[in-house]
Amino acid sequence: MNQHFSTFGASPGLTVTRLDNGFTVASETIPGVATATLGVWVGAGSRHERADEHGLSHLIEHMAFKGTTTRSARAIAEEIENVGGEINAATSTESTSYTARVLGEDARVALDVLGDILTHSVFDAGELAREKGVILQEYAAIEDTPDDVVYDAFIETAFPGQPIGRPILGRPETINSFDRKAIEAYIAREYVPGRMVLAAAGAVEHAEIVDAAQRHFGGLKAVEAPPVVEGVYGGGERRMQKRLEQANLVLGLPGLSFRDDGYYALHLFSQILGGGLTSRLWHEVRETRGLAYEIQAFHWPFADCGLFGIGAGTSGADLPELMDVTLATTRTAAEELDEAELARAKAQLKVSLLSALETPGGRIERNARQLLAWGRVIPPQELIAKVDAVTVEDTRAAARTLLAGAPTLAAIGPLKGLLPLARVAGALRGA
Image (cartoon, rainbow, N blue to C red; front, top):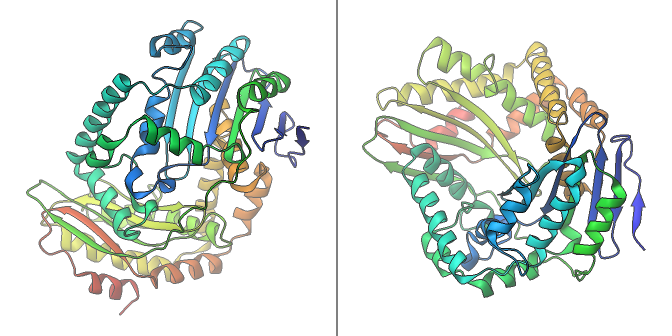
């Protein structure tokens, strides 16, 4: 028997049902909205791939719209666009999503197409060959873009030899090796109902969404999802000396999982350090010294680990000063950040959290991701309370722990004068 369960005050219009096989359905009726936004999230992304499957999650996302047992690729597109809708998909490190937006009266059309592509795709050899070519073009475009290359090198260096550190696109040798058998084996292993969520928001009716989920996904076998390879931060450096106009670099440190008690404190530190026009790095590097067009600090949390980073681009001549200022500013921020800065960072984070819920697309992404991560949808007021509870000392303590970690450095371009990694680590620790 399907299970309906409480949404714990997340939204009065939100209803969640879990099918007998573990597949989850979440719908949220939003008054005054005429469209329906729907999507299926699968808790499987690039970090779930084996070494010989590198890039397979992304390829499967592309192949989802290339034909089923009852619809051609053209028919899939026409069925959605004939009712004025749009359909899309995306792959990340820890999940893959397939989404559509239509008028509320056409929700059934979108549900039938999404169900069809996720359970009856044929992975035609001709379509597969063409889509491999498209992805190889995408790969080549990134290889020609230094600020993309440096971020791929950054995460690979931070998590060496691990699935979580591999670029999502894959490599030409693995992309070219994939066939229908590899795709079907991966889907059978990773696309299990216990880690799948169908989320809908806007002009939707829960009963209709559940009926569609039961029809398309209720027959999936309830099998155990395979364990995920743990992400273990390593650190190190990768320097790519090239004749370019600018040096692009990313400096990183071990971050925290979104499950960690210190997550919000560290996230707020990243905002204070380099999250806006009033941040310390922007003020010192961009406004005061003009060393870079932009500089940012960020925190990428995963289910079991995280990665903190600072990214910027500058001329080769300005690189030594940029590094000195960045390291000094980061160290000073960890010791001297104050109540006014923290209050501003909290306000910025709360606006970000709440504004994401102002569209049906933001709602379904929030609902699906939280159900996959926590098994429930977390009320906004609960998240806001966690943000508000962070103190200046909490944030300073999180920053001090951060700076004690082993650094990761990835850089590309004219790198003469770039500090040795040992000196970077010493400067962050005040040595």
